Length: 197
Image (tube, rainbow, N blue to C red; front, side, top):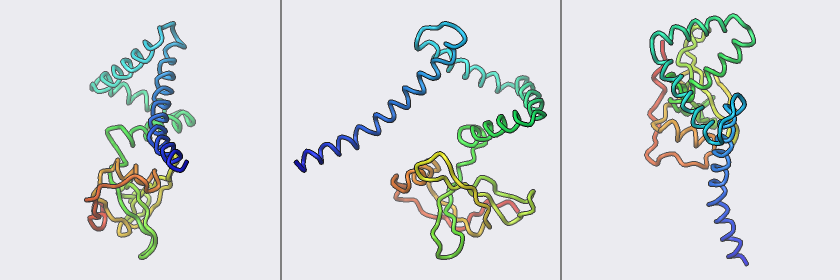
């Protein structure tokens, strides 16, 4: 009976991540497919292809100089609307932090509040806070494990140690609560040295 239970648990460990991944992909597909279907009658599946194509086309057009100036003018107009500015600006900054040209989660670090204290894995998001009068401070974002949230800390640069690891691996390690493995060759490279003085 113990062997059967062991096989069941092993099967669960193998199938559950696949099932969750497929369910998430199906949810994304059906939702994106339905966006265009709300405006016009399109066959199932075609809405997904057309939506992805339109997003790619907008990205292509947004790369040209003429379109960039039009987008800048549009964003300046949105900046005059208090609530819209907050939602639009926050969403744009969040997307840029993960997938945009100005990625923010690409500098993994170890942070300690004092010698001998437990360390946190985080990502430097601001290398200089001089505009706030905090000249020797940096901003470090520490994601919470098993959640889409985190905490931002403002600490002296001397309390932060750069990690010589892939930033995606460091994020997976932090979000998984340390269950995902960092590369065995990962080693700290000393005090964080990119602080802008």
